[in-house]
Image (cartoon, rainbow over all chains, first blue to last red; front, side, top):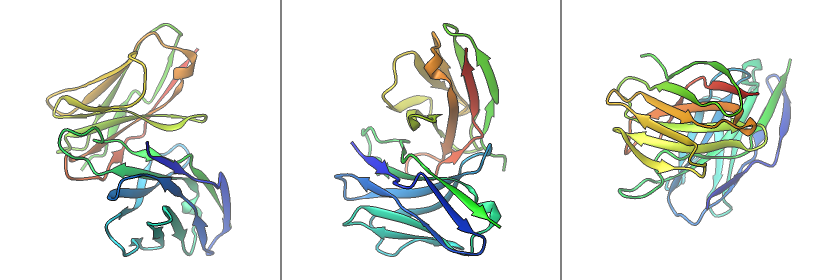
Length: 120
Length: 113
């Protein structure tokens, strides 16, 4: 079974600074998807960034970028120029590639989350 | 385009009762997945429906069930509620087979007393 581990229960950063959130995962699959989701307090979860395992290039979305190390099974999220609105719980998630007749449809496996605090 | 909606947003039930939660996916999305979120267990996958068929199921007891209607709206039901069922229940929708992006609703906060 796949597992996702976020070893940092809490992180904090000063506004305008850079912070990196860590995530490791365990899988025997060679192709899969990885995601970072953001869940602000009392607000719904939104997708921050995604990475396809077959792509060597690290994904970037504006101030958010990832460091994907497939061999090490590591997938960290870097937030540059942190803003107060970045404060949230961040979840790393894994998804197998679904195939016809398989049992991986829809299932995201999440880490335990990292609470990010942004100080003004 | 409207996002994923879930009703009700908050619910208080008594142990032993049953409850039904509803999820309306984004228009055009045919897949709906359900998750349970608790402080202790985190986010856990319940099941996924596509075109009215359950394609995947997580490790939850049979008290947890769901269904999907022809308009892709989905419901999940929990029978014989236990205190440990208190959680935030999230649903997520996606287009279906070849897409991997899931869009989450705001959740239903269920409290069992």
